[in-house]
Length: 97
Length: 382
Image 1: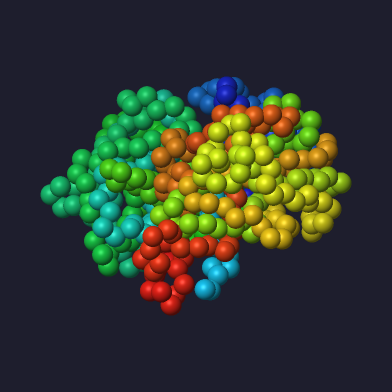
Image 2: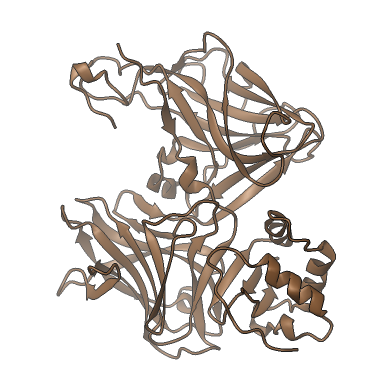
């Protein structure tokens, strides 16, 4: 099952979702991430997306591991995993919060 | 004389991708990002291109090179050119590369692609300097897409452990002194718009077919990926000047005369959700004759608040479109409230194929060339 390693947003709005320490998916915007998530019926709530972005840092150099954020619920983590279970996404260990 | 029936112009399938890049972080001294591709024989390659995703800390020096491909489908480790290697050492930090940019690098030595040996590897490898988890660059490998692509293909080489990918178009480039090749895409994106969109409520494709290809042709329809919201309707229109001749259809922003149109009902589709390929035909009979060297626009104009979503692709500089079908003959256009066309966006293309038909030979030479010549006249298909 695909897992999320880290999520970081850049000041210009680009969002990098790391599925392993070395592989990231680059989304040009929150809207693009939302549209991609909505392209399949995953049940991924928009509120979860907003919370994820709120938890991520604004500077990629200081990006923290969102998956370890104590404010991120287990349900939201599960939804990220489900949404990102798409083609060519590599498995990676999720750090435990 | 046999009709060409249908000739697709614009190659939408290979440009059909979501605006999501898969990027590979090269933070180890034995990491490589490898793209295996066919190069056009006879090409003198002087540049290679990469899409830089981002740099963390200060990048090390990397080496970009052309290599051969072994029988297992991986780079053979031998840089082409022998004593005059087709490679270049670069540092994104030193070059001041911004994040999410496509960049061209001039090789230290050009390489001429021989016939019968055109499978090459475009390889990014660590060269020198500090490289670790705090000092590295990441490069785009491919874009996410709704279709798999098995060749060309990319390989993530993580410290010697290789993973091939067939999901979506690879992102790389090679170039001669006069044109670009490969897939030098900067970005993919979408335009969602309706009749009330304040900035642009009509998007389109500006296009021209040169007189070296044909004398006249007709536009049968278009093929494009998109989303049509339920309960909507869209007018597909063909615009030109006062008439469709090359003298009066020049591509000027004031040329807003509709010469053919078709209203399409959004509910006459299999699905209103997600991105789907659609093929729509203009429904006039007879279709208007279009002329080589004239410049026209095709557009989508939603008729109500229910939107159309189109995909577009962009390159760093307009000449990079030479790597794709149609080159710089197709570009994105837009306007608001049926006014004049805004300035055309030469670096962008709406992902769309034009379906041409009734193509006639170029003036002054039957059988000597052109887009399509009746086989009985000894011509060739370009």
